Image 1 (cartoon, rainbow, N blue to C red):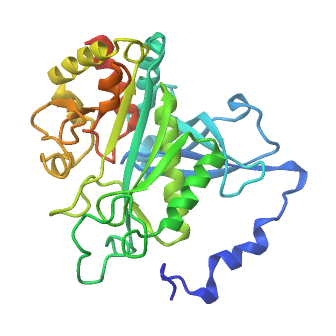
Image 2: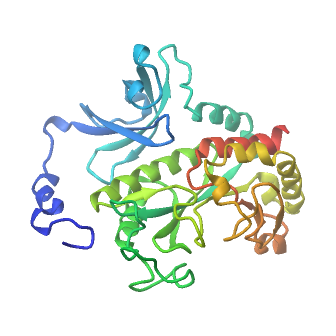
Image 3: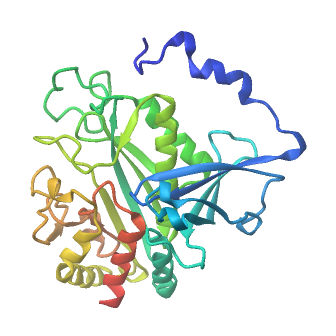
Length: 360
């Protein structure tokens, strides 16, 4: 057995190789429709198109069985998929595409689990603020039995210390998956800006952004789809749980970096401080949409603030919000909200941040 427990005699790569370069007749294209289900997870299915679409307007509205995804009752299960973003497909390549779709009911209203719709309205309303987001997506790789990938069977790795931005066998695990995902995102057109190994062994992070407005949520969801899909090829699971291993191990977050035209301008620290004063007043409103089980992570330990109290500080990774030292020295720039869990819906998080900064 190889490290991913795939029989080399039945290697999927060798089996698929003879099919990979088959060209469809008549210019037909495969479009993978991708959506968020009722459990904050990802689903997808494929449609054959007669030709490569030039824009979203060339893509048809599709549907699926919402009763099988936690999004509709069985007696009224048809749920509509409306294309909202399109990317190159790094899995099938060629002219094939990935289609991010939002979910709607038959009467055209947003499905109850479609948080993108409300986020779009907020971003359009405050477009003049030119809000930039960047999200640091942490995640944990698990084996088939839900054990962190590479951890010794029946035991634990050494204490945290050598793993963050680590190099070398024993310090990092499954870098090949990370590299494949990085390249796939760049191929697709996702604005992935970097990757690094995280503090807990088998935990990694990648960053998406800067993205303006609704683009942030769209690109983060698509990057998550690609991560799941690529890890599937290696027989590895991806967990976005904020505290996958209890005990003296770091949790996993989705630190959200934010700037506006005012915070980026000269003297922007004043705008940042005004935003954060509003954050303090709405702390628990934010916590409600910052991810399930986040109380297991936001303990005041392992580079987190406490879930009960809001604070901010310069270069303080134990604060709710960190202002980078470079920003404080320059007097303008961005801030990092460290409270969101790795499992967040980015539409909810970027939405409430926008709402708090400009409507509260």
